[in-house]
Amino acid sequence: MNDITLQKITAELDKALSGQWFGRVFVLSRFQMAIDFRLAESRFLFVSFEPANPRIYLIKRRLRDVEKQTGTPTVFALTLKKRLSGAELDRIEKIPGERILRFFFSGEDELGSLQTFSLVTQLTGRSANLFLLDRDGFIVDSARDTNGEGQEPGNRYSPPVREGERTRVDDELFPSNGFDTLSEALDQYSLEQDLEKRFQSRATAARSKLKQDLAKREKLAAKLRADLDNHGDAEKWKRYGDLLLANTGTARREGSSIFVTDFYDENTPAIEIAIDENLSITDAAGKFFKRYTKARNAAVEIEKRLSAVRVEIERLEAQKNRLEAAIETRDEDVLSEFTGKREELPVRGQKKKAPEFNGARRFSSSDGFEILVGKASKDNDYLTFRIAKSFDLWMHAADYPGSHVVVKNPNRQEIPAKTLVEAAQIAAFYSHARQQSKAAVHYTQKKFVNKPKGAAPGLVSLSSFKTILVEPRIEVEPIR
Image (cartoon, rainbow, N blue to C red):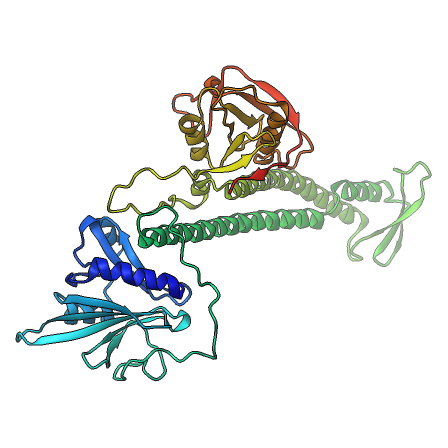
């Protein structure tokens, strides 16, 4: 959070919180807490002193959701409860030129004496921290252990020393994005960022698990092939046994080598066969026949196992491709099949008007028609059956999983051929047919698209359609 955003948040918090009473403290994570000031609409003060992303604003949450997320109280949280419980917030000030807010409280102790404390939220990157100060500005306790003058309990508080003069270039106010307050905009942005991090973490975990499973199968396949090689050529061992018996009376022996006539070759050359010099020719032949039987049986069994492993590898490769497609299209439903529970945004405390549908990419055709492309299976359903109108043009890659594509047609015009091709190219591009040189795309008016009862998200049936063959590509500009 930059300086200008913190100035706006300070004014917003001061207006909402001044005169309110300090209530419960909820420890949401190691570096995050929420404080109840008994505000209407189930609002809480949220503070994050995480070094990578310190921030402060009001959030709207159901109390039971906050309680569910709350962990074991920290020593600092217990100190806040002891010193500030029931205290009134007098005012909030921002230290000029610093990303530091100071909350001033007053209240009575057990003996009825007036006590004043202040809570410092230091949102300064690596030195981000929370401090409870007494009336003289000395540090009573801190959320994190930090070093430096004015940063340790017992010291008079002072902002952290900067490592050289640094000029912040991100001096623009955080955009409100249509929300009523800056807190709501910051909260929504933070929730979406956290959701994205969790999505990427789940995607990485799923990829890693598939990679491990594939590596195990490939290692097993390599071991089976090595075992097969170690058993040798079964037909070779049988041939040696036959030749030794056929040449019992004529074979020439030199130490551990036996020279016999190869009756399997039409030229009947003499060949050398290595055997144990302590074995007779008959016993050596018997040993080769045993090796033949063992190698033959092993070949049958190992090939069965290899075949099963190949099937498993093919299945895992298909799963890998499916996973990558789900990650690319941000299909939470498919990703959940690999990782378990789907991630959702927390439920807000106050019911808000339905947000704008964000589950689609937007493009504009050369002829000015808006093209919407679903991102995930449920987004596809919402786009097709909630956003698209009867005379809008609907598209989907034929015989390949992919996004639903809708060409908006509010005036019920005839869709120009160029727009038809551009939209079909996009439909092919956002499907598993992307790597093909050409792909077939079905298209029809939305009124001919139906949802079979009990069908999985994204699955539809068409009562009438046409097909166009296009190159998977994007030739139009996205709508920002």
